Length: 230
Image (cartoon, rainbow, N blue to C red; front, side, top):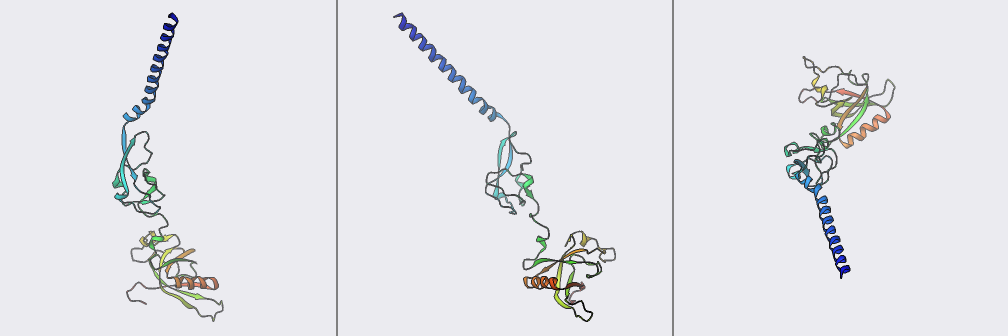
C-alpha cells in the first residue's frame, strides 16, 4: 500500500513538472512575436503587380503597406506621390517594396533614342572639320549628304540624301548644350567635329547612307534655316 502511494506521488510530481515545462516553453516561443507586434510599423509603397524595365508607374500599380521600422529597406519610397509617373529602371515583382534607386524621372536608355521620330532611324557617320561644314554644324540643323566615290579631280559628287535632320554632333544631343551655345549674334559656336554626326533617316535612306560610307567619302552641305529654303 505504501509503495502504491509512493508511485502515485512520483507520477503526480512528473505530471506537474511536465505542465510547468510546457508553460515555460510556450511563453518563450511567444515572446519574440509579442516583441515584434509591439515594434513601431512605418509606411512604404509596394507594387501590386509586376513592373517591367522602362514601364511607367501609376497610382493603380502600387499601394501603401507597413512593416516594422527595423525591417524596412533603406531607400524605400513612403509616398505614392513620389512614385506616380516614374519609370522603372530595374524589374519589380508584385509585393516588392519600391526603392528610389529603381525609379527614374526619365525612361531608361540613351537620350538619343527619345529624339528619333517614330518613322526614322538614327545613323551616325564619321566626319571631321575638313569634310564637313567648317566646324559650325550643330544639333537641329538640316543638311544634304553628298558622296564622292572617285578621288580623281574630275569625279562628280552625287547627292545621297536631301534635307535630313541632325540629331547629334559628337556627344551633343538636340536640345542639349550645343543648342544652347549660340552666340549673342545668333551664330553657332564653332565645334570640333573630329567624331560623328548622327542623322535622322528613313530605312531606305539609311541603306544608301551606309553603302556610300563604305565605298566613298561623305560630305555634309548645311541648309539654311529660312522657311521654304529647299
